[in-house]
Image: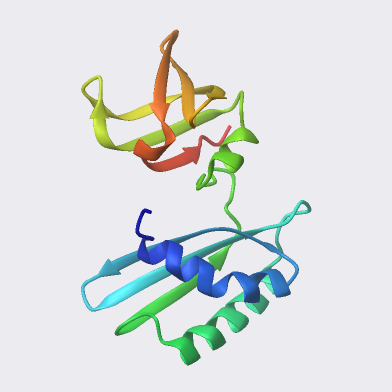
Length: 153
């Protein structure tokens, strides 16, 4: 069984509070920058996200973080919509954007490259993203993806 990253553990901790605000937890990024950390929480609904919803989620998540204290030292909490160039965290999210242009950054090089930009063609068995790059299909195992984002069009 794979060990959960800090961002994944934080997502599981805050998920109930986010869903209680009637929004979906799209994803969580966690960055440590010296003594200060940044916790970025992306929320979404089918109708989009309002500033009031971001404020409500921020208030709820802050309460949980104050009680549970999962982040050592100072941190900044940011709550927002995933935006037009939304990060993609799961295969399910990727499947929603088949036919769209995406940027991928891989954990390990594939064919000598760690970065790819192309059209997501399909998702094959075993979680392999098939990306059309320069008129060729590139098979990228989702487990090798460090970061995936839609390309804003």
